[in-house]
Amino acid sequence: MPSHPITTSMAPAPAAVIAIDGPAASGKSTIGHAVADRLGYLYYDSGLLYRALTWLALREGVNVDDGDALAALAARTPITVRPPTRADGRHSTVEVAGEDITWDVRRPEVDANVSNVARHPAVRAALIDQQRRGAADGRVVMVGRDIGTVVLPDAPLKVFLVASLEVRARRRYDEMIARGQPADYQSILADMRRRDEIDSLRAVAPLKAADDAVTVDTTGMSIDEVIDHIVALAMGAPTESRPLPGEVRAE
Ligand code: DC
Image (tube, rainbow, N blue to C red; front, side, top):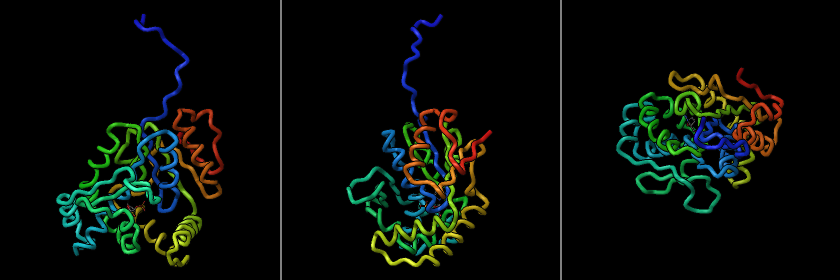
């Protein structure tokens, strides 16, 4: 006999760790941030580590094709990703050796080089512990490319977001225009296609869904629909929630 009475009225606890992976502009950041907000969880965008290292390499003149030199740079320079320190639209604050580079990591030269930096095994090895530490206390939504497959393979909920290349390029274009930045749809499309290829075909930790991930195709969905759906999944309701068009569930 258990020494404590068994209660059946406890509210279901949401999945403590939620891994969201997907290609560029699949909605990971917006959706991951909103899901974290709803659940009162930490939001952790792992792509920011790769972006910060890329920004640093470009500034220090380190060759983005030299994995060992990049890993050495990561080892000697503290890169920090933490909750926002300013209310200027950021979802996280990114610092390198104490310098706030949150907006610099979104610059086009970082976009153009980050996939190359992220493809090196030595770079990935240098950054993995930091990501795992970020999830060690639970109550976290971590977004990236290999969170469900490599960084947090035991995450109780893994979501893989997909959307057509054209829809993603259009979203990125609209975002840039909304921020008042110059944007050209065709070059965004071409750059995104190139990054998809590098991220998906690299030898180590390529972009792919974990075997037990729920794949959600957001092409025809509103952001709010996707957020509601992932929150429902997180509340442990995978069998109660209605599968959405484009959703493929692991057997
Ligand atoms: O999500 P993002 O566009 O900010 O990611 C930037 C780059 O970092 C992307 O080209 C792939 C890489 N990345 C990765 O390889 N693994 C992750 N977990 C997150 C990002």
